[in-house]
Length: 263
Image (cartoon, rainbow, N blue to C red; front, side):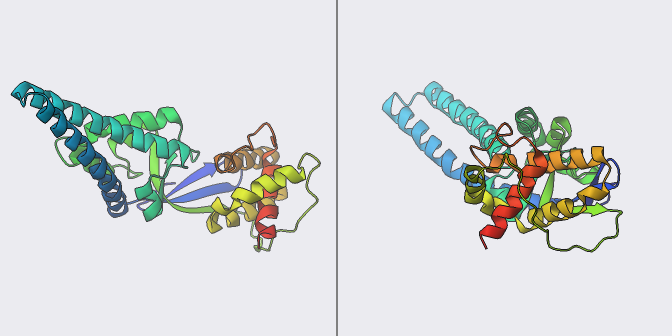
């Protein structure tokens, strides 16, 4: 289901994950912050080009070549900048992090390297004819507020808040700790505890609600949602790949245990 401000991704059998879509205003503000960072980098590149021109002959051809190098480097810098943050920093550039936005895949998962590369190379097209003209038009007319790069890369920009809705009318009680599975060593728990501060309050509430209600879900829906939720968080815990703690529900249980121990 899609409306003007929210997109709901239906996980099979009773579970619905809902994100609030990022609008033009918040995306523009994030872009301004990121562009400010680019401007600093571009200024350094422009100074370097000026120095090269002065050092050589000041010839018009040299000047033109230097300007071309600066322009090409700026475009490449912009692509690399966005791809790095979107893949390595949970879909958040400094601008998006400041404004509470993130880029995700249209299926609700983390954006992949390929998706990020495509959506950011397409910025060149979104800029046409000037100042993101094509991108703004696309964002205003598409159902998920997507610019052309988002459409091509299968991505969308959402607000940080994540809701999980279910048809099971049960009260939301604090999670009751159960004994951790035997594969969870103290070493793993300490590792998670060290990075658990990166889990937001909204994400914590989502994890707790899932753990409370998982036994009421059909097995396949329970497995899929646990896997999707765990996969969206694993990158925040360096050194703890899926091989060390493959069971997604165990991983989520450890996160809650670590959060409670820090308080």
